[in-house]
Image (cartoon, rainbow, N blue to C red; front, top):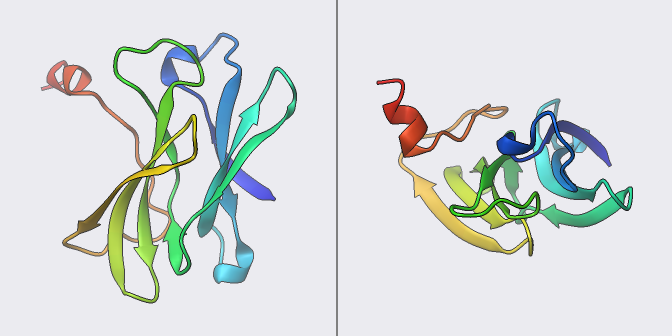
Length: 131
C-alpha cells in the first residue's frame, strides 16, 4: 500500500507505543490525498496488524487517532475521518474501533466536506482550555 499521515495516540508522542496507523492513498481514485482506508501497524512485531478498506464509493480524508475515554494503552483508540461517497454525493463522519476495525459510527453531514480534509481530535477539556 501507499500510505500517508502516520498517527499514534497523542499521549504516546515521544515514547514507545505498540500500535499506530496510516491512511491508504489510492491514486486510481483520481489524485493525491484520496484515501480508501487505513492500516494499523504493530511496531513491536514490525508488521501490519489490520487493514480496513472503506465502503464502495467512499473516499476519505486524513484518518486521526482518538483515544478511547478512560484508557491508557496504545491499542485502545478509535479512528475517525471525513468520508465523501462519490456515488451518493454525500459526506459522512465515520468512526472505527481501532482494536477490531469495526465501523462503529457513520453520520451523514449536512454539507459537502472537501477531499483531503485534515483534522485533529480535541477533547471537550482541551477545547475549554482554549476558550
